[in-house]
Image (cartoon, rainbow, N blue to C red; front, side, top):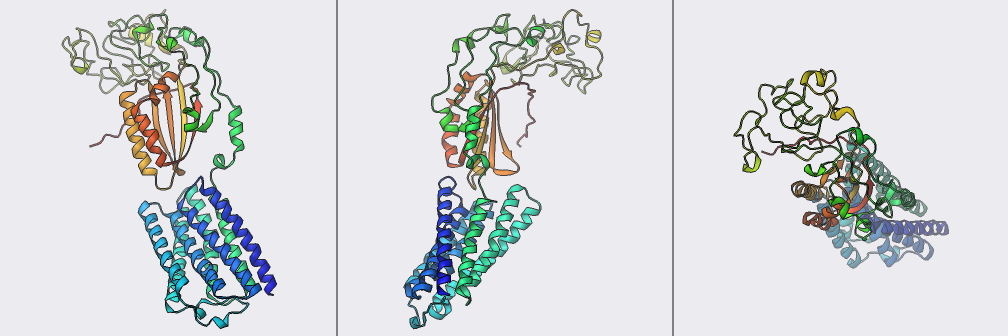
Length: 536
């Protein structure tokens, strides 16, 4: 019988050693609190099973008894409970308190269990010894306290995980799954080391605890597929982004956009469309960018406009000669009666809106001052606006569905096409990125503050950054997605050189576990200003 127990315990110790190696390997990429605690648990179980095997083969003694009691009776169940707290705690103070309790109580208990004398050493045999038989009052009290805390923590965490799962997301479901797998074997482990049971059953219970930890880490708490499956990177490497067009398509010829000169050649593709943020964009493989082509003005008077190439025009003050995009009397025919704008629009002074009784300033007020303290000539209007790519004033290129005919109501010439007569497509030079950040436990608030400050700095100082948005993921609280659109790759290069972006790249290292980047091309888009939450 002793040989059977020894073989079972040796097999369990080997399994525990393999599981510990797996956890240590994962710790290199993911330093989670629960992963550290459960690595301590599996290491202790490995030593406890080894002590059980040696004791049943060679008889238990003071050394094997201390090893079994310290590792199997104390460290394994206690740090299993500490790991459950680290898994379910959502605030940093709770996690810190668990670490403080675990480390302090462990140091005190281990020192006492090592130094305290063993009573009745002559009663050791080939069976599992009970702690109450050989420990004095202080070690016995510490072990009872550890077992009581383990019971309370495991049961409480299991109840909390189930309650969160009932009204939570996929993350709560995974935590509940792990709690259901780990709590019952943990409670059984405490019972196995406290009560007199046959050695083979004790070895099986300890081995079952190892299997529960392995299953919980490998299944419900496994990392994301793209992080653990390296073969996906090869698939992404084979997918190249489509080459950017060298010239606008025929749709521009019938619309308001003048033709732009074709680039000599599209920029070479990057090595991959998905990869690590630092390795991908700091390796120097940025491709050749034609700075001269960017500075050259397109034919057809486009230099009078300027501004970001968002695929649509933003009419500046006094820009004339563009049919279908202006106000009669201002050199921009095609959008309604003088001073009224587009029919059905929501701009002030336009028919069909609640501001229809208030005409646009500047059409009749010769002394209307412009922005930034400047004064404009009589009859000029102020067209200052956010660079969103939408046409102002009016904010619509097309009349609303069911509105009267534009030409009939505004006197528009039949031979001049409206801006909405053709498909307005984004500029082929627009460059986009989608970055997925996976954060460390408890780093969400700090990262969000850093991202908010960075977005504000980008909004103030980068006119060629068309869109820069940081998203939170409802189903994955530790993920953030940053969506970026730039006028072209030159604008992206300039964006990276900004001081606030260097600060963002430097300080996010303390919060980010992994970052993946996807390059984008814009095929179609609608961009308007986002609603703003005003701060009081």
